[in-house]
Length: 155
Image 1 (cartoon, rainbow, N blue to C red):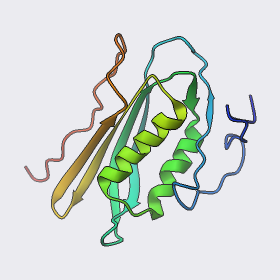
Image 2: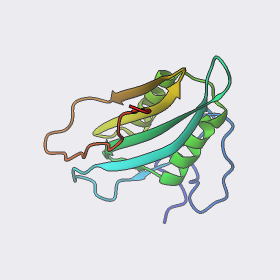
Image 3: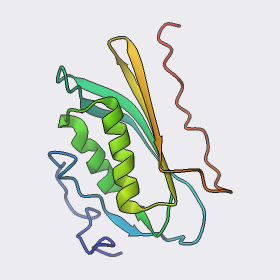
Image 4: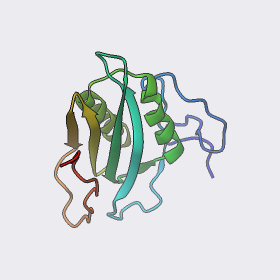
């Protein structure tokens, strides 16, 4: 096991790590793809994601699903968990938070493809779902449905 990521920064893995105070302070760790050259999909689900409403300061809750096809690197899961947890005290609109997470991962990790689905619980009686992807799905990549049902309320 290496103790640094692909940039030479120390990994969170195997060390005590405090929750970052903000997403900007969070360090995402990337390690070499163990199946370089293979086309496959990785899924992370965060069913209890929390951030703050920028208007009221009250907590907002979402179920995030992140799918990606690795390129040269993969994101280390503990650092991703800490990064997502750093949003607990971050105020942002659903669209900005969801797309920002996807863009940061895509910009830093440089996967072959990445998508994020943010399934936000209702605010003001309106559920907001936000979707972003880095580009077209690579030919031959199998990606299952994200599996999160649309909000139905008492419907």
